[in-house]
Length: 185
Image (cartoon, rainbow, N blue to C red; front, side, top):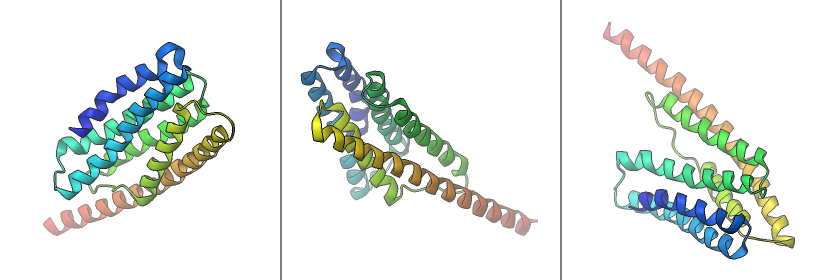
């Protein structure tokens, strides 16, 4: 239910972000609240699923889609409004799409679990993007730029780590598959 709520919040968030031309502080604050709710429900969703052993096939597919949808909508929206450089949006989205494709590339052999670095990256991205949604000025605006730079660096570093894991898992899986085939003959 929390995943579905997050998915439903995506168009609401986008509408709020662009309300009244996209730069009205009141609407931006309301958009931030929708974004914050979506990000917080992601934390609760995963925790509840693990604690209660409610991990489902639907959740395995829908949860990452919901995460990428809200983050992608925020990044694209902020770039469209001129508040966030497009290169940041492109780096983050390229990493997210690439890692999703990598997961499918190795799924036959193994699952690439979310790493601690990946979770820190998600948290840093969420806070940084949230700060961009808010109409901040002065020192806080500088702080959000520094936090976004950290998020981009974590995005690149964890992406490289996932590539390394995927190559290793696929190589290992193919080797195990070849040994099983050889043993069956």
